[in-house]
Image (cartoon, rainbow, N blue to C red):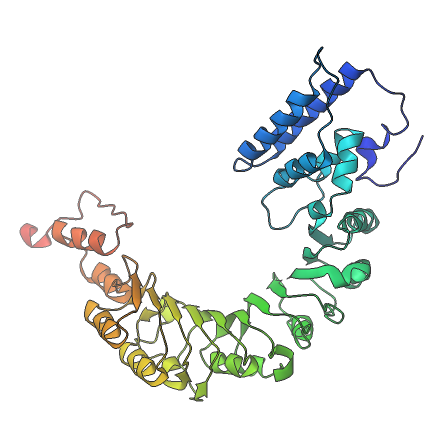
Length: 432
């Protein structure tokens, strides 16, 4: 009897080499396997899997008029693809696809193991315990990917060296990579990841950024998308990186400590076409005019309680002649005059201007933008005219709110829920 040391393969290893079972018993087993698959898929996938599973089941049921029909590999493969969870990364869990598909019968196992597209997404963890067992499972999974592009999420709670050593044979396959830094002893080395196009770096409960900065200091040559929204960078922090390391990036998502960081990003990334900037949007302190001819999309979201009363200074230093989309959220008063002068100076073909929640602009201001760019599409969320500072002042100075005042607040913020205690309308003047 053939045996396997892999925990992944163990559920079916006992079936290899066994005597041939009666036909009816095999059919019952396959049908029970179909039920497992049906229960293991998500709600959205279920109709598609049901349709294809019914085809398989109807053709494997005993019929006196014809022999049992085995579905072609192509049909099973299509069913298996729909069985995969919608999660961005998959964990080696026996109860869900693709591992579940290898436990039904020998035929299903052969098809699943031989279908590389089932094994292209994986979440891997480097922890202090059970590493040998994990490594065996991860290696087997990656082998089954058959040279297809890989999308991986790596979690490190110790040292990156073990994970990097395991990945070395597959390094040319990795096209998308998410690094989750927990408590790490050293940097993740980016050398050799020539196929990598998307990189996301997250930091959790880990104060020292030297390991992360080292990972970002030499980016792969084909990398285009960089997401580091859980890291906080000031202008001074970004001076650590060389221009050549970031010059090929076309999309950046970053958490900034002050708007002075953004002109530096534009200098680092001359080919940048879209940028997402969140964080502390303190006004520009050292004006540094910058012209960037490739940026087409700018999305920004800050902290409304740290807003600068409409004077960001950002649009005073920027000239973006190719800008097409601007989206702003949570920045308080909108810098109207500053932005209007920016539009005139840039002469950009702006197509979409989106004011999200907690962006305070007026109808008259938006009319001026439409006059400057007649083809501009303006999108304003219901509470974008709402002034949080004025609202808080009102709450502090008007303990005795009237029905009309409460209605005004509901109009400004439709989702607000008012709780009025019985004596909140009590007028002390009446008592006196």
